[in-house]
Length: 183
Image 1 (cartoon, rainbow, N blue to C red):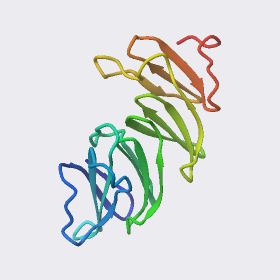
Image 2 (image 1 turned 135 degrees about the vertical axis):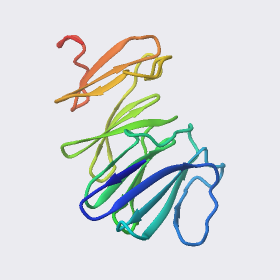
Image 3 (image 1 turned 180 degrees about the vertical axis):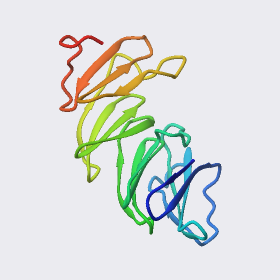
């Protein structure tokens, strides 16, 4: 996947092994286990790679896709396994990392003053420093057998569908509003 800001090209890829060439920063904190997901990030000015980093975690497996990261002019926030990582742009220095789900973080969405994380077991709201503001669980995992159209972040609320096709609606304060607004 590629994304660009006004100054830099950012390339994000899923990797199979956590092998350093000696030129990248590596962020992996759960050394008791092998990483289940590895993400490699390149930042360039359009011509040359200026910085490279690898992030890894050992929860459930994830891949890089269009909603597994968010970026702006100064920060890249990436889901990798059970953890969300924030790296500064362009130098890819670690700003923070947060275990945001007990299993897997599928998606991340930028909202005012923070982020919403669509996890397998939890929906979480993080502040801009990666602190968990709230987490909500459902009766089952937050995905469907099809794995599509099961999570939406709208203006002021989140709609999630669990494996049993139960729908949940939470406002950005984490309150379940399923009964108050049509889903």
